[in-house]
Length: 135
Image (cartoon, rainbow, N blue to C red; front, side, top):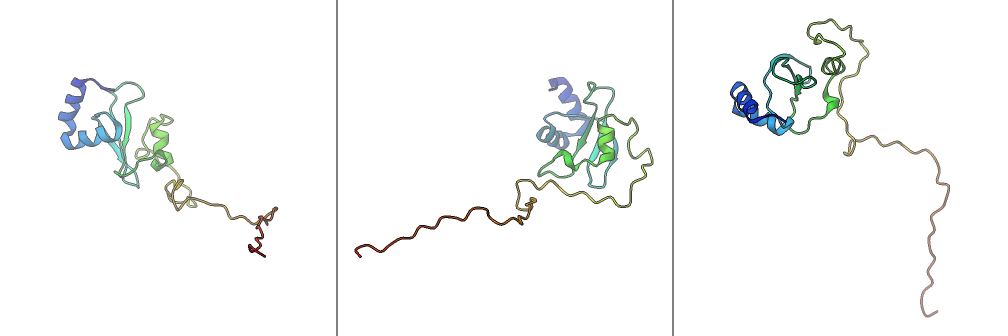
C-alpha cells in the first residue's frame, strides 16, 4: 500500500495511462528504471531509491488478460528473487540447446493434461433388467 503523496508523485512520473494500468494489475503505482525485456515481452523494472526493501523490483506482464508467475523465465526469476544482483541482460547465461520454449499453465482449461487410462475396469456397472408390466 502506498501513500497518496507517493501515488501522485509516481502518477506524474509514469503518466495517467500507465498509472491506471499499474493500479489494475499490481494495485500500486511504481516508477523506476527499465532493466530489460524478456522474450515474452514482459518488462522488468527496478527502483532502489524510493521503494521498500523487497518491493524494489517488479515486472509488468505483456499480457493484459491474465498474468501468472509461470510467465517469468528462470533467468529473470533469479534476478527478481535476488539470487543474482546482475540482470540477465548484463551476464552471459549459457542456455542449453535442448531447452523447450515456454508453455502456459493450462490447468482448469480444455487444454489441461489428462492422463490416458490403460487399466480395464475392475467392476462391471450394474444394468437393471426390467420386466414388462402386466405379464
